[in-house]
Image 1 (cartoon, protein in one colour):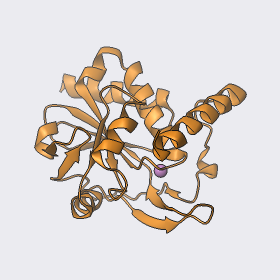
Image 2 (cartoon, rainbow, N blue to C red; image 1 turned 90 degrees about the vertical axis):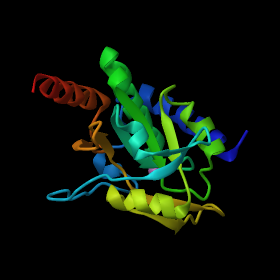
Image 3 (cartoon, helix red, strand yellow; image 1 turned 135 degrees about the vertical axis):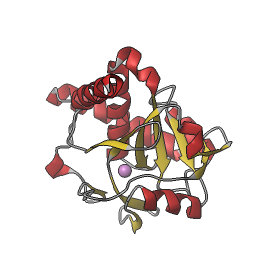
Image 4 (cartoon, helix red, strand yellow; image 1 turned 120 degrees about the vertical axis):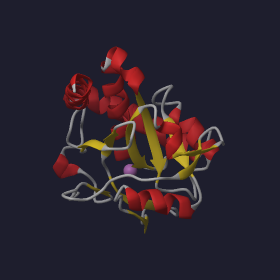
Length: 210
Ligand code: NI
């Protein structure tokens, strides 16, 4: 078993216990979001998204053009993340499942902010935990830097004092994008899966009518 997988299993076990104990789906309130996950984003007048070339968890090279027949839920994170990334991915995939037939219109995507450790092989094992449709994308540092820049994602290596390895400080948002890559909505760490489902339903309904 890889280190990332062991860490994830540990998270899922403790996450389930916390869920039972609190009865709440999200057990990180906004105030308790660890320092390593930023949740301030100013998008006024800012263009989000753009062309990219990345490597899928299956090993094939893909571009933004490969996702232009589908709505997208995009999260930027990394597989070594001990808490917030798996919580957000669970939330994203739970929201997707609750959309019923509408989920066929949407592709969930995880883009790695840690390409040095998140190889396609590592991502493949990781995405399997969350949703059969979840796509993991990684690439060279330069390819990742391009996509981080176009989505205005902050990510930086920080030394983890409790471990020999580093961790990543990164912004934590779920981007809901139209097939043509228009930004439709940004979800934050304090948004619940139920809220995401409801908002997506509303957005899709208004777009189908127009
Ligand atoms: Ni994270």
